[in-house]
Amino acid sequence: MKKSMRNKARVRLDERLLPLKPEDRFRVPPKGWIRAIRDAIGMTGVQFAKRLGVRPQSVDGLEKSEANGSIKLDTLRRAAEELDCTLVYALVPNSSLEEMVRTRAHAIAMRDLGRVSHTMKLEAQGTGDADLETRIDAYIRDNLSERDLWN
Image (cartoon, rainbow, N blue to C red):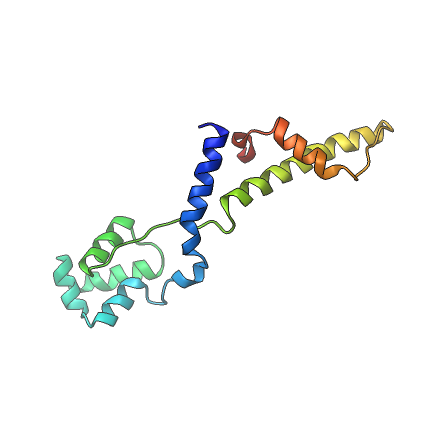
């Protein structure tokens, strides 16, 4: 994928993920979503088990596995369907994807330019820090590929 296309895709994905922030709105209830929704609509464990086609004891195990994070996605999806819900699954970045790429590129540029700066100082050819941001931007533009950021 070309860089400009990847950039546009990142921006579109950032826009789609924006409504999911802040993430604490989606924090899992202490006993899990299945139990919280089942209780809220007044469905017993026995009734839920019947809808799922499992024994009532299995519902307890299912709810515990969801609460502790070990449930399989397909099992959670099936439980959601039986509760007349839709499972929403997303990875929500802690910052925008654009910011993630910029931060990583900046860190790599600083690392690489720091090596060059150190060598030049040893050779008494040091450069001032005044134009550091300009050199970082130029380094990122001329030397870094987005594919190289994550090696």
